[in-house]
Amino acid sequence: MKVLLREDIRGVGRRGDVVEVAGGYARNFLFPGGKALEANGKMEEQAESMRKSRDMRDAKDRAAAQAQAGVLGGAVIGIQARAAAGGRLFGSVGPVEIVAAIASQKGIEIDQHKVILPEHLKEVGSSQVAIELFDGVVVEVSIEVIAQG
Image 1 (cartoon, rainbow, N blue to C red):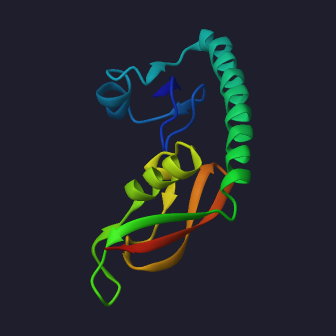
Image 2: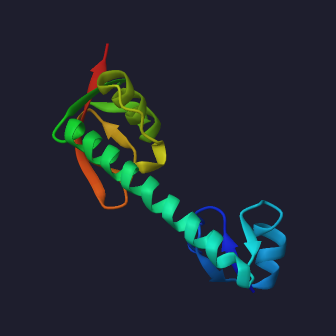
């Protein structure tokens, strides 16, 4: 079944794309959620309009992400956490704590899902963490975990 996507859906397509999906997927997930419309011959103009607005929004978002990357590039973000005498943390430092520290220290709001962290930080010290601000705009940030009294 051909559908016109009204929003970006991972693994299926982007807003304004006309894609072929299974009938059950369209009827049970896409249509009830308002995520897509059934495509017909008259939808081409609407699809083109949606693609143009998507491209303009993407250009603006990419420019904003590159500006944020300029601020964050090479930055050192300090995070205090409770630790044992050997430097092992009682808990761990994950994406939520990293995003909160960046917001408080640099004033930049980032979605926690954009932090690329193979596993939570569990020891005191410095670590490099990648943050994907936009498709193709990835910045490395140094996270300094400091033992808290």
